[in-house]
Image 1 (cartoon, rainbow, N blue to C red):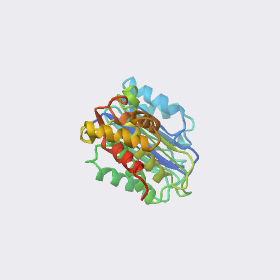
Image 2 (cartoon, rainbow, N blue to C red; image 1 turned 135 degrees about the horizontal axis):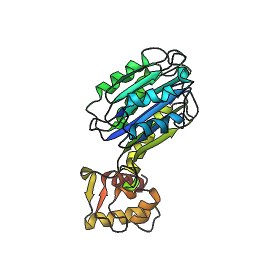
Image 3 (tube, rainbow, N blue to C red; image 1 turned 90 degrees about the horizontal axis):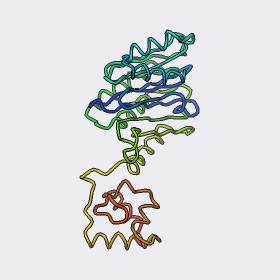
Length: 278
């Protein structure tokens, strides 16, 4: 029912899963990941219990391969399962039960496991792997995963069509405000073009939920501060801080009430929205 990629980043600090399917809300049963431990996709006749069990095995010191062996040893439905796992050290394994519906199969090597079933043909998984290999210079694991997912879709993907997609990425301290490890947790549960919609949501995730880089920060001079207040007023807000709060741009200024810098992206947004009609 599904094609997925499970992977670890080049620097070994981030783990993630991207998945798509002709199945409602595939992001619910398939992916799981824990920073500093690993990631898993369970699909075909998905065994959702595999997610917690596999990550627990790895947390206790098992490799991805050993964790998979333990899961399958205890599972009477193993012939119908499909699983991909990447562990804390980048060890990767994929499994396709002999009773999974054709085309079904996978590829695994260090840092990545790619698998799919009910696919348009045997070219889907290699297309995803080729995309993964070609993007080794991309430091953002989220983008690498979505590019591979897109490559699988363009190669035919799920032969039944499209319905849902999901992206889960974890890294220590990468969550909102640095208070958890969930860097990205996005789902498109029912959509005609779920992959494209997921890419759109990732762009929004980066805008709203990631911190500004030093290169994106614009120092607020007295003149710029006056401009921010004036433009926020044009949009019906009492001050710039109120606009930032209304738009949920708190991650893009250093201090909403008295900011010393503003992100160039939201400065552009504010200027664009506040321009008077011609």
